[in-house]
Image (cartoon, rainbow, N blue to C red; front, side, top):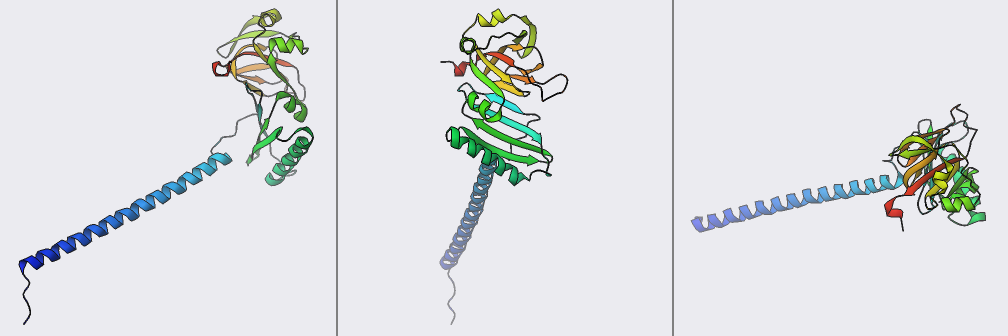
Length: 245
């Protein structure tokens, strides 16, 4: 004769069923959470790789020369890319070969290729140099950095037509004595048609062929469009507060 279930056994079965359902729900939530964690980790890895390789960085419209307070120079060079002469890989190989040969003669790490990428018909390369002298030696373009006092001692006479600069805008004409009477100011002297960014606020600049981009950046460009012609351009500035010692 079949044994009749008691109310107590029915209640126990109901509890076991509820417990099993609860455990299944916990497992389901853990699986979802694990999936989210895996996806987030993968996204973070992709982001870091893209960040390190410069995928998220935009290419500037023209070449920019960054002259740091520590003397390090970084050039972001933008040129027209012609596949008639180079592929992307051969361009990078060529640059590495040139830099390697220079470093073999002048010291390891003097010049470092940080990034090369091609977008459409534009090639972009970012290269770091340990000093303005290294930059001049490697590229052939003149670059000097120091205080006004040091520059005078090194033969820079500041014999140029200057204008004062306030808040990134050219103002009235300035005399050479206005600058040389402030020996602690800093100066970058460059012989190249390029945008130059310094680590501080520009106070004076050579008037000819220069346009202020902002308080720390000057664009140097020949008015007749002849980029093969260059002239010495002075950029006199006060170091940013964080760089002062």
